[in-house]
Length: 341
Ligand code: SAM
Ligand code: SF4
Image 1 (cartoon, rainbow, N blue to C red):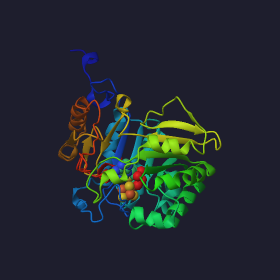
Image 2: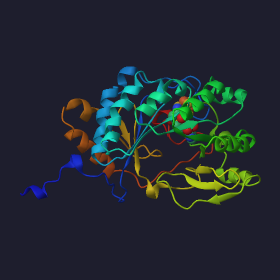
Image 3: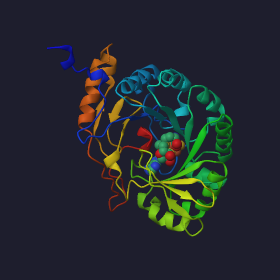
Image 4: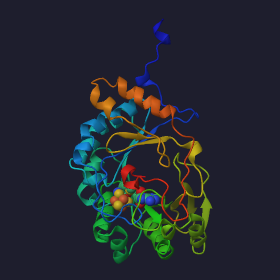
């Protein structure tokens, strides 16, 4: 056999059976969090034993294997990624792929509580944009939703991120009885500070000690409400993700709508997720997964890792099937904090 017939798995792009190229990795740095948002976690959570988590060095190796296969965007998430001890070392290590041009974007999703501490260092490591979750501008309500957080701390974090030159996108989960009151202020706040705002329908992931049907606010209803005050124009182009965007005439800013419950965006899915324990999930809304730890820990070379990644990508499901059953309980037991959205 001549060399030209030999395929080298460790350099082949990742393409699934439906022809979708996988170019985006979302990596959870930890399942822990300093908040307990009512739609995400139960009040009393049992977190994974620390020994079960990948080390930051293992996360670097794993993420780098994906970069070798054509992944050009990495988002670090959680739990709350910034509560992981020494998390900066992971960003600093991965930034070498930005420097050599293999990675186009290194970013994170955060609740913002530790941004004041980390924003500058993240910017130095090559992070250019950050998604910050913020559902309310009311301090009392913020504490109720997060069960323990302080709005002022997040506001300081947002300021620090912008002072460090990071572009900020706000993520707000649409919550019945909350977002209806808040939406106009959230739009004015975000766009007044040059931030995009993305609205997310609640997804039924994990038991949070509350009835999901009480929380669910369809974005079609919210959009109708937004249009009573603001003029929206659909923006045709997609950013490769699940959000559909509109432009607000009065502010010039953008609003994204992520509607997993009422609209399927799976045909263009370009992403996979890895939990903090090294389990690769090929769909947020399905149980399909493969544990990459044995391949990572059992072999010095990355060949076994690439073989395992290939097997998982070949089995990536066509799409998700979120449902809230009639009793309001979720159809997937895993919490959002296990994978970070
Ligand atoms: N702790 C970070 C944060 O809050 O941004 C990162 C992890 S958090 C799980 C990622 C995103 O998922 C947040 O924007 C959060 O609002 C969203 N989220 C959490 N639970 C959700 C649910 N059940 N349905 C929809 N979005 C959810
Ligand atoms: Fe923590 Fe983020 Fe979940 Fe809120 S949404 S509990 S901040 S992981």
